Image (cartoon, rainbow, N blue to C red; front, side, top):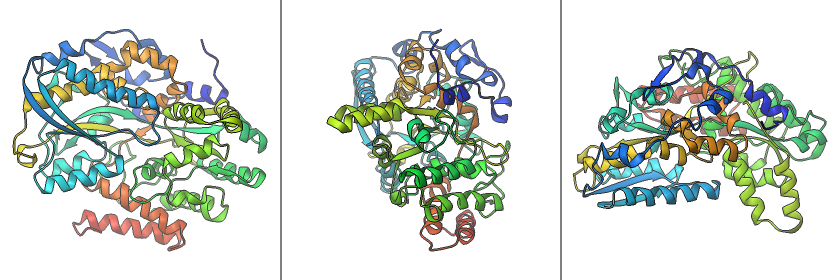
Length: 493
């Protein structure tokens, strides 16, 4: 059994939230995956207990000798992703072509920030791909406008129970399913134990609350002259809501009531006292204390990574893959920089994302879903259904939903947790068990057509308005709430 720093022990002993408690045991291909027992120990107990043959499973959906053509768009690797993930993407397409040699595949990788905009433009010209893999917040927008076909796990050989309930919620529109989850992700708090110690903080204990994050960030900056927390506030970028929303929910705020057990999305809460308090915390770090990078207004997580590796940033929120990213960056460093980078890597710690003042802990239940388009919106007006289902089955299989999430996420298909590859990655990837522990605290983005605009535009704009001084904190929150009301009423921004 491995030894864990205290920060990791915190995550390993975490008690599941009300979301997890409400989940019933689910039957997965005749086996039981009990989500109410979710913990690193439980995940380890099921890892490596089952084997799966992807070709056999998907061959039952689309014959392996099928001849056809498929166009496919997907979100590719990020600039800040580890090299390991790039290799798995190459392996995936090689495996698909080897399994279905007679399907002519034309795939296109797009960045997170470009995918939605390019997809919208293509749809307007009836020039979309047959299959698209979108970030989790995108599907409902397109389903509500009639662009996507109905698609449920049973259509490609799986069961609804093979996927997280929160993930399936993200593909539902008016009671029907329009996609299948490929991967699900939650993040954790990462800190540098050496910086904590030099700043007079306990190196093995992260901040317990978001108020502590503000206080720790200030103390680190005042003591060492470096940035305490890696605030991200870039406009029109997915990194921003993925890091601010956990803070907003922890303080008891929200865009709507999306963090409640049974949300209705009827009440807008962005201008509530709790939401304003969460925004105030970011304001205090950026404006009042100046304890975060001055470049936070334009930063993405990829900009925080080199700062952290250089020992100029003490805390950030990200994926387990950031550990591998640090190893990749360190391998490219030379001389003294290489030694400094190794010191940072040796002092990396992962823990649960902090709570709000009332003990509420939350994280974005993220990931991606795969969809099949309606023919009239596809270039040429035809969708090769068997070829499309072959791709959907392949990516959502236990094998590939695990491998394609290997370094930084989790398999969409719960069977992936039982594979030999899950057992291997638990041993290979440092801190994976910590971020996996955060899954029960996951809050899905609102399942509304307006959600991409709210999360990628309104939330970052609210932060920018407050942090630049264009508006007071309260004015920025009220302005954002009104913008949400306007788009819900059909008026747009």
